[in-house]
Amino acid sequence: MSQPETAIEIQVLPSLAVIPAAEWDACACPEAADGFRPLDPFTTHRFLRALEESGSVGPGTGWQPSYLVARLGGEVIACAPLYAKQHSQGEYIFDHSWAQAYENAGGDYYPKLQIAVPFTPATGRRFLVKPGFEQIGMGALVQGAVKLATDNGVSSLHATFCTADEAAAGRQMGLMHRISQQFHWENAGYEDFDSFLAALSSRKRKNIRKERATAQGFGGLIRALTGDEIEPHHWDDFWVFYQDTGSRKWGQPYLTRAFFEIAHETLRDDILLVLAEREGFNVAGALNFIGRRALYGRYWGALERHPCLHFEACYYQAIDFAIAHGLETVEAGAQGEHKLARGYLPVTTHSLHWAADPGFARAIAEFLKAEARAVDEEIEILTSYGPFRRTGEDHD
Image (cartoon, rainbow, N blue to C red; front, side):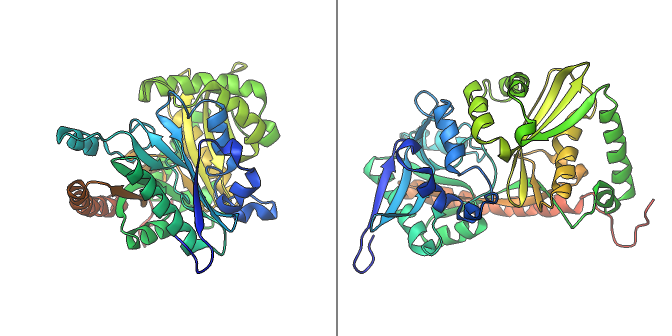
């Protein structure tokens, strides 16, 4: 990889501790140089470093940091959050069937290489390029990642929850494109929650009002906290909630307790924490991350089960916050068709893939074609069942 006179150097870094935050973030979130929020916090130096420092990634986790950095004339022009993976947990783009097929054929699917934000099914840039170096920067990262996989005899390379533009560019570079589906809420310029409700069908509008009233009548207070409103003891409570959810969903939590301690110091301005308090104790909570244009719902947990409290804390409080702060989107995380009735519509998400074995790559490519047709059909059907008013329907 070279320019007419200057070669692009690719480095593999075992830790973000060896690269200054300013150099990484000049690629990861150049839009934040004006002092405002990044598009999303997940590829920032502070977020990824918190995963490292807390032991949420690294030895024993199956997520071994191998960050890619591209330099041109000594200047960092591009980087990528790359991990060597020993399993397929915490990715939310499922390739377990690929692993089984490859191993049934006598191959070793793991380790594989993953360009991703661990445990975070949120769409965002994965090939982080400094402005002005978009084409050569992404090209250098893709070529560097493929070479790293080839040199180390790795079965495959995956870049998950990348942007649509990255997916299109990756296809041009010979990577395989996979589409999946999530549910997102879109802000149509609503003035308040009631104006959002006015856009819904009468039945869905009444149901949401009923759910909110039921949830808010649980016998306590629901608070939405961010920045300095979040206090250290809040994380003691949320850790208990998170452990409960993690043990039921994944067997054990992905994030360590130390992550939340570090997040309090370095990320609390990026966080919206919704807590439900009853009789002086927090009994449930939802953790969201705040981007420049979107709110990202991430984790929920509860010690007590109250009707509709999950919907209120995770979905309706998020919509309230997004409207109040002029955010365009709420991404509510992976899966969950129950989100459809609450104003979250199906959208396409993207990932890119490369496989070392030509036969395996052909099989994946054929699978992805069929899967894409099925996903497109599902999105079309689900959208037709959406909660929004049809033209001519009366308000109540």
